[in-house]
Amino acid sequence: MPSIPNFYWHKQKGSNSFGGVAILVHSSIKSRVIHAVENFLVVDFNVAMSSILIGAVYVPPKSRPPIDEFEKFLDKKLYIFGDLNAKHSQWGCTNNNSSGILLNEWMEKNGCVSIFPAAPTSRRSDAIIDFAISQDKIGWTCEVIDEGTSDHFPVIFSAPFILSEKGFFRKTNWKIFSFILSSLFTYWNASLWYPALISNLLELDMPLPLVRWIYQWLQGRTMAIHHGESRSKTIQMFSGAPQGSVLSATLFRLHIHFLPKTLARFCSHLFADDLALIIKGSIETTFTQNIEDLEQQADIAMKLLENFSKNLILPVNIKKTKMMLIHSIVSPSYPKVLFKNETIETVSSFKYLGVEIRTKMGWGSFIKTRLDKIRNIYSALRKMFRVIPLDQYNIRRKLFCAFALPHFLWLFVTWFYFTENQRQDIEHIWSFYLFERNVQ
Image 1 (tube, one colour):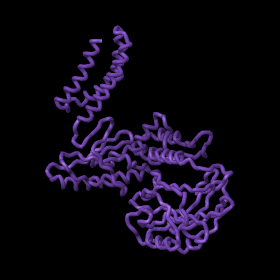
Image 2 (tube, rainbow, N blue to C red):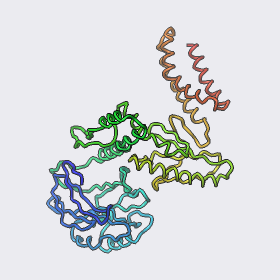
Image 3 (spheres, helix red, strand yellow):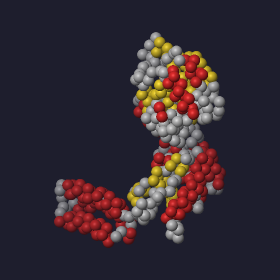
């Protein structure tokens, strides 16, 4: 286990590569292991002159919960936390499995209760399989945090007691904890992996002296988290490039240089780290057949993207990934697109590089948004012009060019795609400003 300042570990090995349990304890808290078997660990904590037992358990899929081990502590104040892989309606699951039925029967027989969150704890299903078991849940609360890269969501349990009156802390600031998790997750997702980058540079026939210089420039990078006067342990970085450097953006682009080639069978557009894929149907086939064909092509594209992501250790942010179907059907059926068994959300509109694209490929919403912004700018400029003398025409002109003109330029770029009515609306706003400017 990694060494964490001001904390120490209690751990127990598991029965498989995904198993094993661990409890992280602050150095100000005294504790000791009183029971340890495969996938199960019990630690004794002293709380207000009394003893509270905290257990950690992992139940592999298709395995029975270690009920025989649980029964050894029925006469003590024990709280068991872990991944039990047990489903039952008693703790919020939509269906029951054999482990859940067995565990629920044992809990009812021995007067135990479950402490579980309201949201699913598994990313792969809507099941709640990470929860706690105790004989008393009064005062306990728990919630799921949507962070991390595991196939399970982290679950925070808040106890009705504290472990030390004189300890370093009495209450964890979970907002800061969640912020640190999200910051680290964002950082690693946006980083580049040095071996993959160097491999790309060599494949692109970059001169070896320049490759060596880039490699040396990336070495010796460190990272630490600062909060107030506190500072975390400094750790070495083996991926990512310094933020703010001109070279960093160039290196990241070279890092993903071969992504379009990987997706060569599709129409792809790459802007920085944003990728847009266009998969088209056929006008010779029916809409239903097109949907089936699009699903098959999308499945191929997602597998290619998954392999690319895995090879470069560059995860895809599935939450920000959207799918939109361009069609002219009144009530269409939509293709189901999955990435690593997670469904990609289907939307009716999407803003890409500042332009809102809709399913009907119309420009109405885009034009309306721009004209509304121009009207608001006109209103602000009108107030400013009241205090600017008429002979200072250059100042008025600069204000218009700085704030209003860019929005007109956005519209003029796609002018020939607009309908006659849309063009008239734009010309009306443009003429209104010119007329008002001449009057003033």
